[in-house]
Amino acid sequence: MDDFKYEKNFLTNVIFRLDIGSILDLNANDNFTKFKKDVFEILPISSEVKNITKNVNIELNIITDKENISYVFENQERTYKFSLSQSNLVIECTKYKNFPDFYEIIEKIINSFTKIYKPISFIRLGLRYVNQIKIERGHTFIWKDYLDKSLTASMDIFLGGRENLSRAMSSFTMNNDDNNSKLVIIYGMYNSDFPSKIYNKEFILDFDCFTDEIERNEDILIKLSDFNEVIKKMFELSIKDGLRKIMKIIE
Image (cartoon, rainbow, N blue to C red; front, side, top):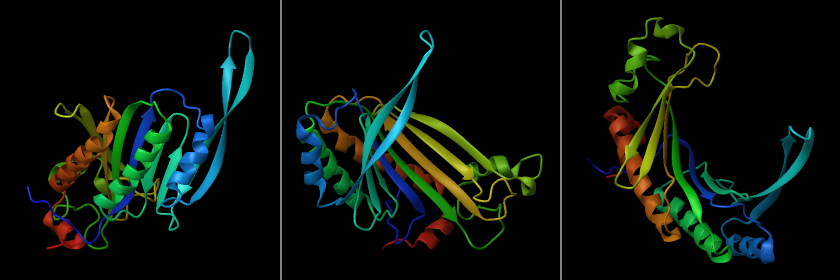
């Protein structure tokens, strides 16, 4: 399969997530101050977010409030957002250009975090690409020039008449034994005007690749690259040359 690169994409969100093995005290030993200083060059804007959760003890008939503090870091352009809590790290890009740029940001954050907060282990790693494909021309429900027919088959045979649909979403999950991961693909006509009928030619391709097996922290970036390749392959299998033409292949 050809390894295409494109001038434009339909990505609205690209998300990297790491779940921490045990509840982390972010401010222990002044670690948060050290970490904030370490990532300031790439993510200079920071804020604190407080959330209140309710803990219910049925036996004692007691409800208590627990305050959870998380931190959000952003770059000057507000295109990268890094959220840090006691249980996970989430890095989100809303203006994705290419994988090397995204990888570089993640690498700097992970290397800094594991250097300062040690020893630390992680129990889940995930990479997610959300494509919101919008086509300005053509019949609303005809995608044969843009997407593989398997992605629209359920709409093509829908007994109620597809013109009456207000949303048509499907999903499936794949196991990858080579790297002990799973890939969840959610796809379909989400309809940004829901619950109205579908009038706009919009299609979601949402790829979420993840694993619950992280033996060494050194494997995180390797798995990140592996997951990117898995998603890229599935994206190319999902689309047709009509969409490639719109995205403009870089020769």
